[in-house]
Structure formats: C-alpha cells, structure tokens
Image (cartoon, rainbow, N blue to C red):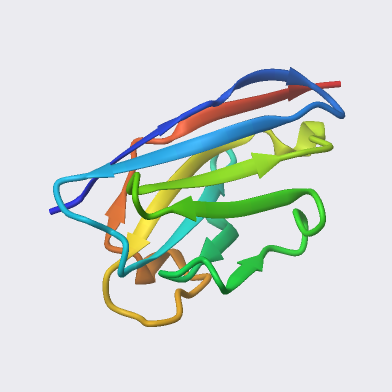
Length: 125
C-alpha cells in the first residue's frame, strides 16, 4: 500500500505562485509514474501533469502548459507541482496519484491506483 499526503495548497492572488508537494509512504514509489489531477466542484477529476519514474518524461494538460512544472525527488519519495502565473480558473482541489502498473503514466484518472486526500488551491482575482 502507498499513502500519499499533499501539502502546499492555499490562497493566492492571480499571477502568484504555489508549490505543491506530495509525499509518499508505505513503500517506495521511485519505480512508478506519478501525476497531479484537479477537481472542480461537481466535476470529474481533470488531468494536470504526469511524470515517469525517472523524471525524464513529463506531460501536461493544455490549460497548464507553460505555467506548471512537475518534478520528483525519488530519494525523498516525493513529487512536486510548481504552479506559476496562477489564474482564478485554477481554483480546485489538487490530488496526486500513483500508477504502479504502466511504464509510461497516462492522463486518465482511472489508470491510477493510489490517491492522496487532496489540497485546496484558491486563486483570487
């Protein structure tokens, strides 16, 4: 089993930055793909970004390309999401997830096995 705990969310003004962290425990995730998703009220979880086990391959959702950066530190069993130039429409609950199956992580929430509890990000205009 893998437990994931997100942190770093909060309230920020438009144009500001936040850096989310997701710490894994229970077992190492250094061999697994990881991702960030976000969920708006009443909506399905949307793909934000993913990263393969080594950190050498990343992919981003269209709405965050050029503004968000996903990275990982396998020594710390942690994945990060640096969010810059935040917009009010980025307001959501952000979740990290782990896919222990695929060599290249997908952008589909159903492909991920382990999830964190989420962290709220609120961007004011």
